[in-house]
Amino acid sequence: MKLHITFSDPFDKIADGETTFEAYSEQCLEMLNSSKTELRMNKDATLISIKTEWGKEAYYEIDTDANDLYELDADFTMLSDGLEDKYNLLGDRITVFDFENNLTQAYSEGEYDTGSISHPENEYEEYVAGKKTEIGV
Image (tube, rainbow, N blue to C red; front, side, top):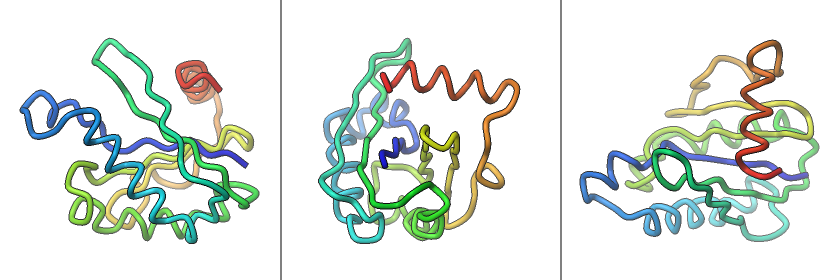
């Protein structure tokens, strides 16, 4: 199964000269690839870079043995705990999209950032459809 992941956006840090898009992306890949065991990944994460009105945005695709986001929920929760301390460019939030099962969740500091895992309904369904189009999935 494929999951699509994004971290806190780097736009402020890039604008302030604290980092570059390339350095940010490299640190995101480093974090994901160092978590292969926890995330049951079959290969290295892949960067999907898209251009938006705010600049480049980075999404990462991982291929995992998990059947859905629920199976990796605790792992993503733990990975988000202290994320900014371990990877200074990433911010404190991980957002995971499981398009196959219509699930998404944001994690921050070892907790849910957006309540419980979401099933797309009403306006949220439009949001997820827009994200899928944006990412090219």
